[in-house]
Image 1 (tube, rainbow, N blue to C red):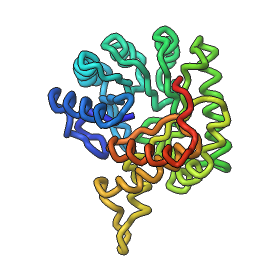
Image 2: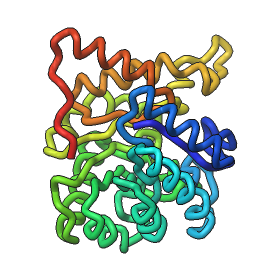
Image 3: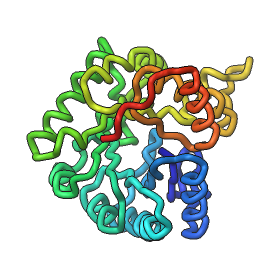
Image 4: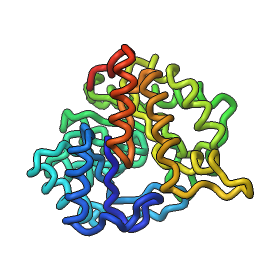
Length: 270
């Protein structure tokens, strides 16, 4: 999954693709480099980010989705709002990537069920401005697993086809670096729930802290690609269905090498 943020304030590439032509060009490039789907987002979910309203989010993403659809590029919509998801699916989006796991907008389950498309449910405990205050766990793996299972159960109760559900541990969302590493090391506990698992560590802050300079200065965003690549390959080796990354070609190459060793192929798409 290639990341395409059409926002002015995303942590990694905010402002780079707010122009329609630049966004479409980048989305097509990521697809040609090996992405199976381009994840288009119109609202930053970085820690501390303020929300935008639904009309603004729709105005940012729909023109991009329409153009990418016309280019034959599969698109997912990265949103926690049902109205945005609805507009995106009408514009050609083939999947909904909901960072709130359906909790932010009760109508999202209805939209996902009606669309019949994959619905990615991420582990979530609150909106970006306050989420880090909620990073309190006695056993992060068990609690994230149980909370994701509850999200899946709610989705199925709302009429979503279980074969359309994908789970995401939500690295960095109400998680400390220690929580992220623990979840990464025990990804199999989530895979064992029986749903495809999406892993999204690309360029995140905890990688920058791991690679900090001697004075403690975190590695800049652009210097986190090797770490992103390593986490992605390890996730695939642990059974992840997919990885969400900013730089596609290197990830696709590394996974090709992993497959060439005789490792099992990806689990089937939902």
